[in-house]
Image (cartoon, rainbow, N blue to C red; front, side, top):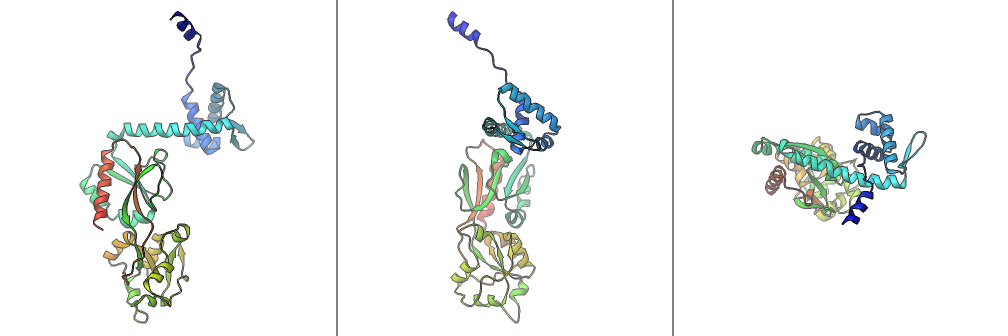
Length: 312
């Protein structure tokens, strides 16, 4: 027992790493710029550099190769930055959860077209049922990192094979032509059969070119039995949302996704001239963190989304 006490007495106590220096280093490593990091931390670039030097002295290793106008991580710096990124993300998430009872905001990430055409027109019903909760909508379609981005839930358009998260199919996304009522009622070139599309501009979006399995005009036309329509001519838009807006404006016929055109069909801004539907390998998915802590407000919002989707 006495020998053990002597051994413990000879162990030099390890001073904890300076937290401010760790935060400064992690931010600088993420930005690869002391100046950019300083802006995010609301300090001067010299302060960031000083904190990094303090951490290097504490650890006894060099973390950055410093050039005249740029910095580059050393192997040790890169390894530490990766670990610290995960640690600070978990710390921020834990702090958010600890203060969740005092806040009623929900951060929802979804694609712009879904936010504008499906979620926003319905959101007033959620606020009617849960006036104490405030929903913040953020648009994007990249893979969401819940810990890093601070997002509570995401709605994504895709095949559903999202690793490391809970993914629940929310809405199917069959595709069919839509156009302005004035275009469908054109006296000279009415849209009576799919082959009549040869007289009209076909509006495209580039998502089928970027993602395998999304229906495009050639797929819809082949299934409809049309034989006299060239599927290629017509403008190409960067999103489904823009193509559908062009159709509302009367500029041509777009291939719409059912959930994204429902409100415009009901409101008379769009018309569906044909019954044929093209199947879609993609759907809209409700995505949540796996093994997340209990979150009653988020559970209420997700339950509301399911009820709205069930009315489709």
